[in-house]
Length: 247
Image 1 (cartoon, rainbow, N blue to C red):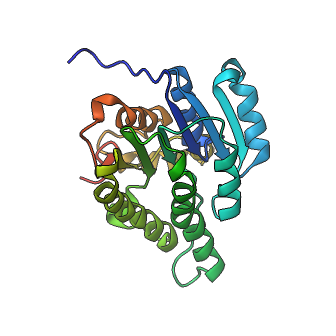
Image 2 (cartoon, rainbow, N blue to C red):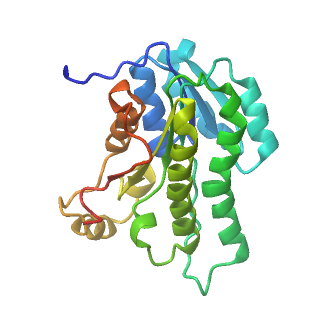
């Protein structure tokens, strides 16, 4: 096999939560690799900022305000897409961290609604928009889905559900020309994480065998690989991108 260089010319990717954080990096890297990209995000201000930062790709870019917890919003987003879909990246997610004894019903429901039901809502409404010729669905889970985490009953439950949903869809949709995989990021240095106190970041990095936090580019590279032709026979897997955190 020749050295891998991602080329997504004539491909279309939809990235939820794509206006900020890891999602923005994924959208940007797909654009740089030649894809047309539809960014869905709940925040209009984040979409406006993303549009400004990605102005060089205006002819490849479609931005849409979509609330993944709202099925009618997802339906409108799918109807507004100007292209058929080759790749769907279900990245949208939130946190509402509290210990179980202090977690409110609203904290639990909002995370499940966004991080798990939102993934279902988006994929269901986009399903008929796929080219269905070896199409890709890539779901963002988390390392905490694999080992649990204090104060994240809601988030862990949602991200573990994403793993189960991924494996089920891989079995159901493989015969229809899809591969369905999940990525489980570890501690990743987004802008939000980078704003944490230095001592907190040092404690986090010491838990990783490599003693460093991941970059958003690390997660994006895994995403582009799973979307590529080189990954055509990878289906139903959970790819941990965590520096060895789960060893």
